[in-house]
Each structure stands twice: as C-alpha cells, then as structure tokens.
Length: 192
Image 1 (cartoon, rainbow, N blue to C red):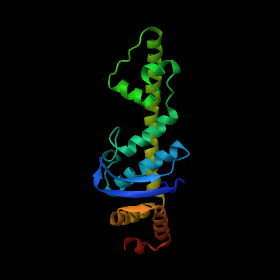
Image 2: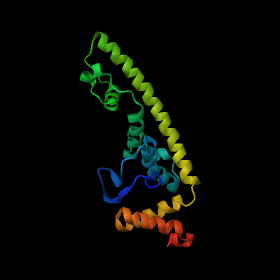
Image 3: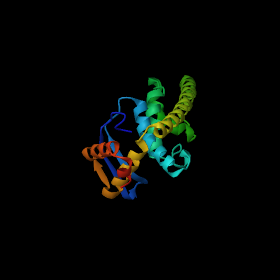
Image 4: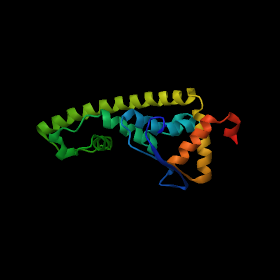
C-alpha cells in the first residue's frame, strides 16, 4: 500500500520473536496526506483478515493495535481542534493526550471562566473524535474493497510475505524487484 500511495518503502522486517508485541515493521517515507497514512496503516491488518477469514475486529480495535492506533492518530491530527492557547498551561497542547486524560476521569484543576472554556472545548473535542472514528471505519471499508477488487494485489502481498518470512528483511530495491516479478509473472510462478 505504501508503494501504491507513492510513499517510498525503506524496509520491511519480520521480528522473530516479536518485539514489544509487534511481529514486524514497514518503514516508509512520510505521507503527504492523512488518508494515505490511514490506508497504509490499515492495509496489513485488513489483508490479514481477508487471508484468515476472520473479521477485522480480531486484528485491530481501538487502543489494541499499533497499526489501528496510527491510523486513528493520522485522522485525529487532521481533524481534532487545537487546544485553545489559554488552556494549554492546564491541559497541554496535544488534543489526543488530553482526550486520553478525559477518558481516564482526569479532573483538570480549573475554576470559573477557564472551567467553562475547558467544558466547551472537551465537548467539541469529543464530537470531533467521534467523527474521526466514523471516518476511520469508512476508510477501513474502502481499504477492504480496494484489496478485494484490485487484481493481483492480494497475490503480491502473499508473495512478498512469503519472501519476507524467508529473508526476515527486505530493502526497497528487493521489494520493487519482487513486485515487478509478481505483476509480470504468470500466476503459476507466484505459487512457486
């Protein structure tokens, strides 16, 4: 997905054994648009759910997957309202960290007019985050449809995954060569 979204893949690596709960990593250049980052983050878990036949929620859920969390953060960074300057000394400048604090029942030490501003900001932030989650689920449906409807994409993923398990790490040039092989090869060669 990184390559399809024009984000250069620097390397893909499988961890054996897993590191910090991750089974591997795909390092790519920064995306120009939040939606590209979301699609890149969701492609792996969704492709895995297609491959295994399990529903996506088995592979990612809120707060339960690094890929899903990164996708959520990409949307939130684009959509969430900035913390008003007068509230930064109280709650910090990161809306997502403040949102985590709100869900943890954290009470900010504020009074009077500042409390009113904090209440209004919190309501606005919660509405924006709910909308971000709706966008995220919509993007997940589109990624799934793209993977299922794009000829050769699932074959290419399976082919790269097989090579990756053999080598444990692929560099950019190897990935491009392998993808060229897959998309230019007859189907029987991909299974070999």
